[in-house]
Amino acid sequence: MAASDAPAPAARGVRVRDLLARASRSIRWYVTTLMGDRAYDTYVAHLRARHPAQQPMSEREFWRDRLDRQERNPGARCC
Image (cartoon, rainbow, N blue to C red; front, side, top):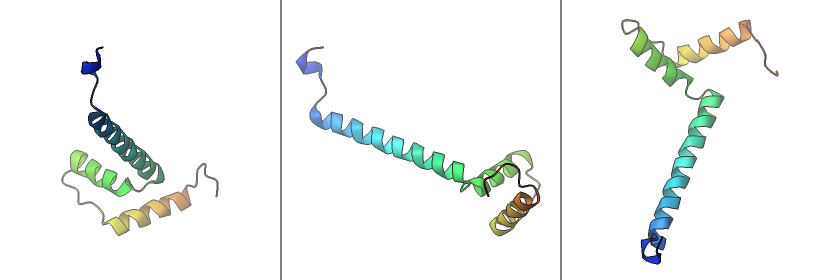
């Protein structure tokens, strides 16, 4: 690669910024999914795709139902 073919320093900075922004979004998605923050959105998307005639629970009802099920069936958890 010739010296004239190398990207300009400004172009490299833009690429690095884009890579960091993408990595940041990926990490945020992973953490919010892992912690369950996206559970209600996932539930609504599933209901609309698979059961379009069914009315989704409100977000408050969803979380109450989810916590009640976890209390009835604790499974493997630390506390």
